[in-house]
Length: 83
Image (cartoon, rainbow, N blue to C red):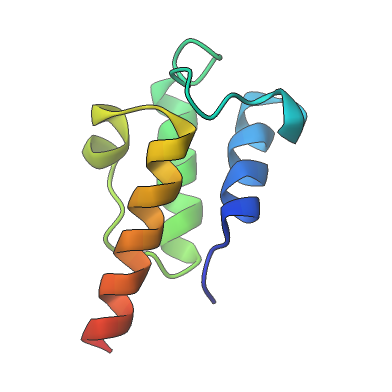
């Protein structure tokens, strides 16, 4: 199963206890309430969904939602090539 941008936004909003529309794509998710526990929860969710290469450090380096969507799409595309 490939994670869609919509699912990524929904997962982030769920962890932040916000509505999907309330999450900014460009503002740091740390400034929107993300903490290390929430970040690890997302890594676990997304690995369980098949994005095995996602890791805490890659997400923490740039904590904007727009970056995370791009990163996860690239990781999934690289997984498709390896399959």
